Image 1 (cartoon, rainbow, N blue to C red):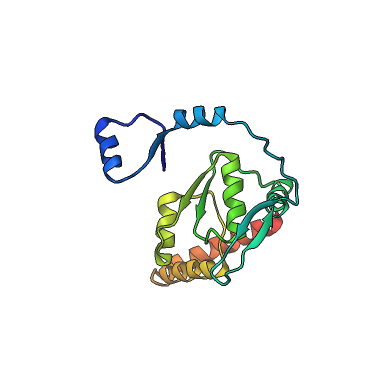
Image 2 (tube, rainbow, N blue to C red):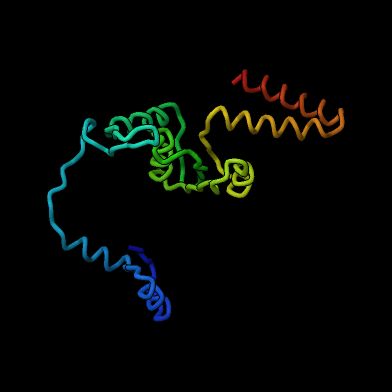
Amino acid sequence: IFICFEELGEETSKLAEDLWLTVVNINTLIDYGSELTCDIPRPNKDSVFTVNFNSNSTQGMIVTHKMICGPIGSLWRRGLVLEASDTYFSYLSPSNLFERVWIIATTYSGGSIGYYSGDINKISEDMQILNPTHFCCSSRILLKFYKQINSSIQKKSSVVAKVVNWALNAKEVQLKKT
């Protein structure tokens, strides 16, 4: 099912029908939903949010609302408040809970989410295209970036390498002060 925000033209509707695709206009969906009545229980911290599976197991792990909302609340209490202008770069598996927390927090704030192309070797290119404001990653990815940056600096003159090292040291001193 595809949800469309605008009316489809005859040609597009025919193409969707030929491909056996169901296309529903958002207003039709809203009208349908407004006619439904049912009691929806309010979740509490221990109610099931989702069941999470990963590639290492056939058993699902029950994830509660507390397990998702707790980390988000912790970020906010520490002053990391996401805004609608933020863009999150997503590359971890959707079964990764840390990734899901960031996706939910970004969505809640109205921010944008960009997904990597699927080629781990092109992740820095993907980031240059997306220009994210935040990105969660593993140490393996950071080491990959470090090696790429170091390699490109080594190819430059010794003057450039000295300037880069000076700038990095100055930034490190500044970060330690804050």
